[in-house]
Length: 73
Image (cartoon, rainbow, N blue to C red; front, side, top):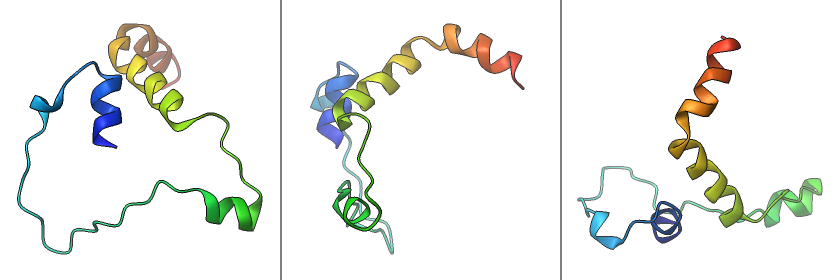
């Protein structure tokens, strides 16, 4: 996940700072949709890396979407 996010942001591993584990930190994060697919028939609308790249676009283009957000608040 970290590697994909760094790639989408055009950054390298030098941006990563390792820290000590937090108490009760859940290290079993899952990005697997097989259970919801099997039980509910869910299928993602796009590949994860495509969706991630689209979210990074919003970070880089805040002036575009901020105008829309301000109108709807």
